[in-house]
Image 1 (cartoon, one colour):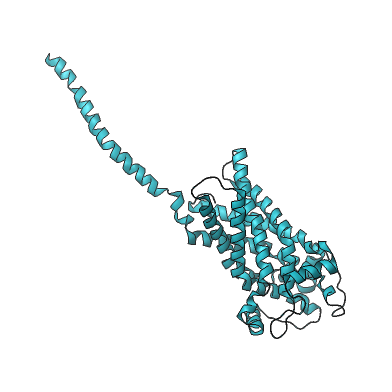
Image 2 (image 1 turned 180 degrees about the vertical axis):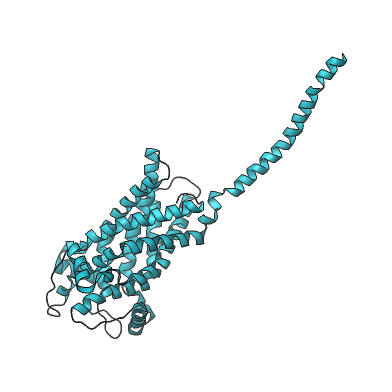
Length: 349
């Protein structure tokens, strides 16, 4: 009996031990779960915070801008070269060039480093433009989703247009300075007196001629262009990325980023080039002492004159370098942006 009792004793002890363990186990499990939740809150990770996302987007945009800037300069020169037709007899007829001829002409006539003329204000622009557009799109996307996983195309389009328009309006002064500097080499080759000698000088000249509001000359077509470009870029990237991952089962990886960014660059270039041509011409036109444009009354007048004197496809002048630039720009930006976020432990964008 004693043996039986003693043999039965371990049972309760084990049960008691188990009971004790199980009584402490929920607490330990809860603490572990709580710790895990606190350690890996993808939604609240510091890399997902407003300022970290802002800084990452500016850094990624600066990389993309520096790499692809020569194509932007070539594109701007192509868009301007037919503008002489708007002022009959003002200057001799210009020789039309294609993308490659324009780029090689800049290297031969002005020097290879001139392909990066105006890159400084372009980088200044991205401190405002890229940071604002990414964080604004992210905020609008979360607001429109309202906690749901599904994100309708119209919601993505609305977020893209709003983010792009706001970002470009804030960054318009830097964009105006960039365009003025980009065209200085061409003006000097044509024997015209230089207007500016650097970013700071361009800024002062614009303000002295048109006041503070003069910094937003061409902002209307600029904002229109940015809204269309970001409708193409942000909306396409977001939509294609989710579509590819859903249909193929691929994880959030480089291949998905590459496919999405290439599609985004093509759509953005197609939608944004006409507005980009108008924006460039309005911003580059000479002004009187009051800062009023001498060639165009506004973006609509520029659109009508361009089509009337040069034909509809003049609106797609510079499309090839725009697309060739936007594809690698978008690719470089999104790969850099996603990679930096991943390295910091943030979730996929």
